[in-house]
Image 1 (cartoon, rainbow, N blue to C red):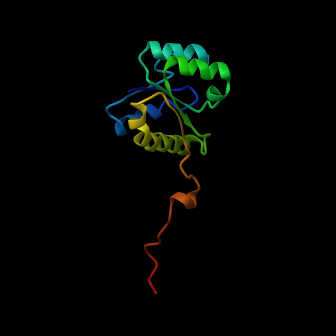
Image 2: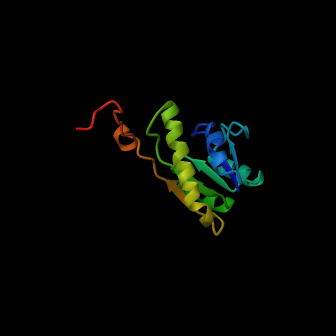
Image 3: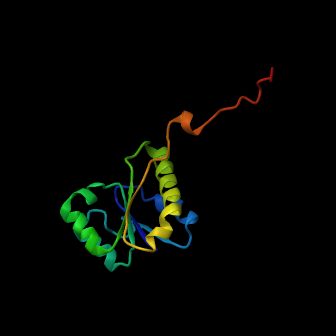
Length: 140
């Protein structure tokens, strides 16, 4: 499948997600020179360029009736990412993890029918993700 990473996500995601899903093609808005494209014409252009899905943070595409209808008409899958929970490298890592895990779970479904899927954010609080162990501490 061909996945388009929308302009509202980091273009570096293509490089972090691709190795985990080597049978699929990931391109970003910058690569496709579609940074300033409005959503409705964007869906048509993506279909014309052979894309199967858009990965985006733009939830309005499912809320606005005209955008939703254009999405349905395009045949594209819509894969949404929850709002950013971190900035910089942390944000890219969290988005990358959400996409990688989410795609692993839904790829078989995408083969069957057009879908809209929201990938939930990965827990991002330090205590949710990391447990420090003091290797110098003596066991009592």
